[in-house]
Amino acid sequence: MNTPNDHDLAALRFQSAARDLNHIVRRIASRYIVQRVPLTWRLLHAIEAEALADLGFASRHDEAMLNLFQRPHGLSYPETDDVVDFGASNALPPVFAFAVAAYERALESVDPSASGRSQAARSVRRQRAWGG
Image (tube, rainbow, N blue to C red; front, side, top):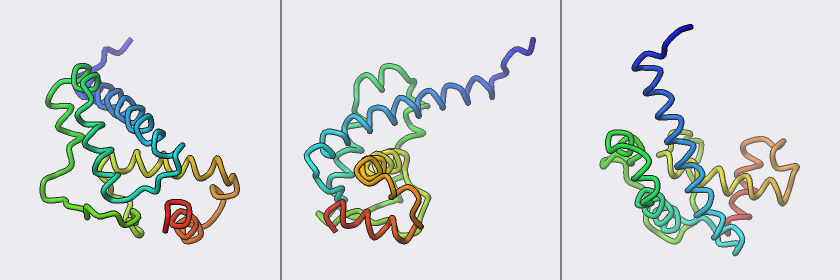
């Protein structure tokens, strides 16, 4: 039987924290999704702030782990009421990625054919569904 090394344990801790944060973000985003509130930049920032300030999340994970989920200070995004559009970028801060995924899953539950569409078609559909 192999005993896990520090690297393996750190990877497990990170996966656990990421699942935890994803659950928190989905819960927050669902409050807006059920009200059909479009995902705007301002809302995305609010979701990020609320998720990262979650006391349960902070109590379950150490500070070093929490810092891994903070958006780098040099990485700024608009803080407007425009609908979120990342274009073709797939390099998103974790909370942003989890929130966008929650909105996309909600769209797919309303329109199951959305999951089989091309990226361009999903992008156009997503903009309409999110208020664009």
